[in-house]
Length: 416
Image 1 (cartoon, one colour):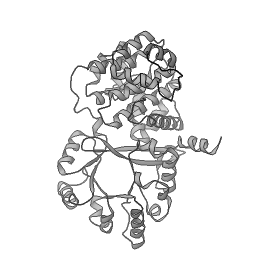
Image 2: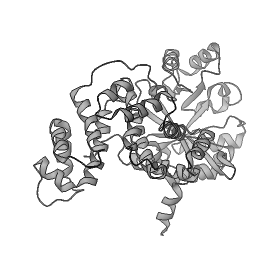
Image 3: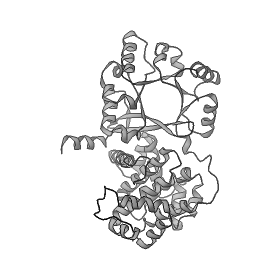
Image 4: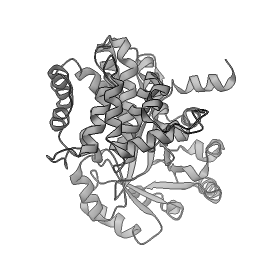
């Protein structure tokens, strides 16, 4: 195995989670990356080792981890005083100053040097107003956990920095109410998973395109594909038909003659490639008007569940479809029950998916909880669920990382 292949393989062992940072219109501005270190006694433990953080980011790659957005990384004094941060591109990195930092001349000088090289800084708002005042003129982002601070403290931070060059970032934003409140306070960025909540779902009918694309995902989940049915479903979706013809005639496939017939192209692709293309294109098309992290999560979840299916002896259930559907209520803004009603799934499959989604105990519930725990980086929960499912922690972690890399290859763009 050559050096590049070894590094790629090592990347899959990294214990790392990410938390999205969104704008007021719910577009992803970046991700905070949180690194752990392996533990022989079970769940991985937090690490403040600068080499662990930098090595992990370099191994997995910022593109895979952050989908082309900014990476927010917690730093240590050692990281700031050394040269390891220089291994990461300044246009992609936001350095979070440690909360225990002291404004000593040498540290301030080191930060100013990084700033001169184009690196950006984030500072805890409450601490910046006290001990870290000398760093305030370096800060591009002021972060504040609005749940832990009083209204007076929030208002003081906002009034103190809103007129300056800093962007105000509210952390731990997990509900729509918290998002709305922080927005009214003057925060411009919001870190957390509020956008995945079902607070805005509404009962409505699917559009024909939405229903068509969901039915396509179901059609390719059958053990024996009905190519005629798949062709008809694609033909009834002009945008998807155009996208498939464009893909068939792309340089990536390298067919010698132009493909002008969907029937001809579908047969040329073959079952495996057709299924791959439909899964990606339809999932991304369904979510093209939504937050890109929702779309990426749908792909990561689907791939993760698909890869663990064999170990779980659940081949009879399409776990890719299960993983993808698990977040489709947030993408489509409709209740999960309505989504399942529009799918030609058998009643048992519908019951299992719905039970897992609402937290009732069922065959798929542990898989759903494991998928969600790994997504959120809830390591103790991951360890318990992995043991319950008879899966090793390294396998779960490698599988999730490979799913994240797989999904990031497509970003927020459907395959052309």
